[in-house]
Length: 478
Ligand SMILES: [Zn+2]
Image (cartoon, helix red, strand yellow):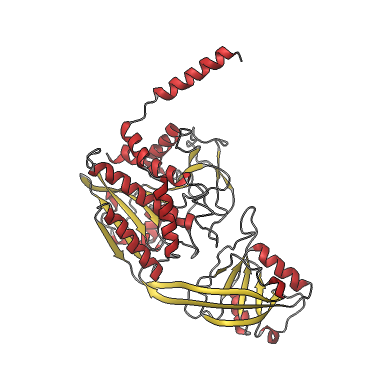
């Protein structure tokens, strides 16, 4: 290609970009989104604790969110939901005592949910299943290193014969859990007899190797927890519109796994707060009129549990919900820099998702915006699903067609490629048009879902999530 034609190509490209003039309000909204604030909110939330619904940490998180909404002068309501059994993890310890040189081996372990409190205890460690037939009598007083997943049957058997603790190896997935622990829980109950400690795959491998070489290993452990019934608290801030028909922008406020939960889902909560601040700021400064429709900013006290309570409470006015935009994990993505909009296989999501898709296509590649975006089919497992007819039907509620979508940058703990829904192929998607590769988080439900590993490393994800939903709302609600 000659220099001249390269130059004219450049000019054409430039004209094309200048030609698509950005809407001034969309530009203003984008300029107001603060990455610094998004990041500091995640740090503050993670500092509060695991934020599980019904625990003191969950209550503290709800008070924090209430204050944040009040600071931007949005009317806010804290809804207490029916109490449920909640696990509050206060502290624990786990260490190798013998051999001495392994005393500092165990790192980034995590106490499994619904483990009981136990005093500091020492126990010989054995591998389960044992290489030789182990008499039930010789289980007593020992701790066991076991493979994931832990079955209730095995837990019961080991408890029955007097085991003192379980150390569970994380599964090894490509790029996840080698140095940090996947968080598995015990059955939600007050009376689990012995604690469960989740270990990284590598830590568990070292211990297993020792034991296979007949080197005796002794561990010490303790745990301090409370397991009590408590009410999850959902925080609802309302930006009033000309009509009481509304859009809901939401995220689950608990860490879901009972871990630090920076990506899952302090990132989503931070997105809700930031979008509320930006939109409300534009209205209160007179830049934007009052929206045509009300916008509710909601942080659920407990994933699924709180959304179910919400749809029950609002069963007579579900048709007033024009759309649900749920953030779940907008803090990281292991292999791509893509913004995903789910579920395009639900027909009545069409208008809402076409709007998001168009925003995705118009802004892709621009400075300060996503590198890639796409809609994708249903995968389940988050709050947007509770608003869909199937779920409402299961709750014996009117099966109203509430458009309900989730926005994310990484889901689950491994890369998945799924067929794209027919008729849905985004121009902003760089992969094969017939499929969607769903990016994942290497820290999904783990002991290292921390700000340092997720949001601080890729601060742009949350910014993109807020801009995309904000711009879509400017087009839908004004
Ligand atoms: Zn989540």
